Structures are given as C-alpha cells and as structure tokens.
Length: 239
Image (cartoon, rainbow, N blue to C red; front, side, top):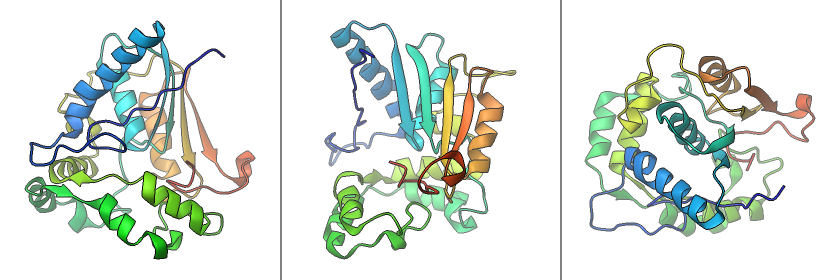
C-alpha cells in the first residue's frame, strides 16, 4: 500500500535508553512530548501528511487520547489492541489500586523489570501470567523471546499514574488533561480489537470504550475462535 512501518519506543521503553539518576519520564510526558515528536519525525522523513497508527494496551490508549484531545492530528486510521478506557475493578485487587499504593509507588525509583525477567528467563513459564498468555499455544521459546525483548523497566511515578487510572476509571488523569466536554468521539475510522480470553483488558471493557468514544466509522472485534481465529487470545499473546 506504499506505507512505511515505524515503531515507537518512548523514553524508558524497549530500545530507548533509560535516564538513570534523573527525573523519570512520566506517562503524561510520553503523551505530550514523545508521541508528537515521533509523529513529526515520521512526517519529516517520509513526507506523508497522514499516518495509520496501531497501539497495544497503554500504547493504544495514548494514541486515541491524542486523537481525542488534540485539535490537529495526522491520523488517517487507528487500530487499538486491548486498550480500554477503564479497567474493571474486579480484575485488580483493591490494595493495588488504592490511593496509598499510588502514593507509595510515586516515591519509588526505577523498577528493574527487564533485569528480573532476564534473570529468570530460562525457567519462566507462560502459565505464570494467565491474564496475558495462554500456555497451550505460547511455547517456551516464544515466551522467553517476549521476556527478553518485550519487557521494559518502569518508574514508580509511572506506576502511580497507572494506579490512579485504574482507581478512577479516567485515563485522561494519566496525561493530566481534562476530559472533553460533551459527546466527543474519534473522528477517524478506528478498530477496537481485544482477545476473547483477555482477563486484564476484558472484551466488555474494550466494548465500553468503543461505545463511549467511537463514532460510526469505528468498529469492534473480539479475537477468538468464534471470529475465525485459531485461538481465544489473551492480553499479550495477541502480539
């Protein structure tokens, strides 16, 4: 179709370097600085005035918040995968979404998740993360590949912002922007995808996002056996 493929790793994620010993990059900065700078760079290199964007989990949330909150965006089409407006409270224990937990997390420094996963990589099993993976089709080699390349460190303030979102059900709080007034919806075609057995960002939660911010140009699909997929996918094994 003549479209280049670009992958964004915001600061502190994936192949982007961590800023050890400095103030951590918060989710709101990834939204207000990293994402717009990335889009501007893609436009300058390719000469294209539009992009088709796809985001998984928090990545999808940041993309559609950007489309909702900014007056001028280059998005032609969006695809989100497991990206709800809210997380069902039944999924997350109350202690993990409390104000006290959020305040405690905000005082933490870098949490070395990538180092921990590399240390236990050889013996790791997909069954340890039932919300994210179905061990029946997530082989050991594939799971270890994910752990080595798909897990990033996280800073305490970022974790605190996630706790606030889960507690309040308002993702706009993560980027410190007010919720749009009125019936504000995504103007561009957007596909909301979710795994049939996703136990973290459930099909019901993603359907709620489609109903709340989707327009007539948006659709919703559950990735599972009933929709023609080989498996009933969970949160991360869709990738």
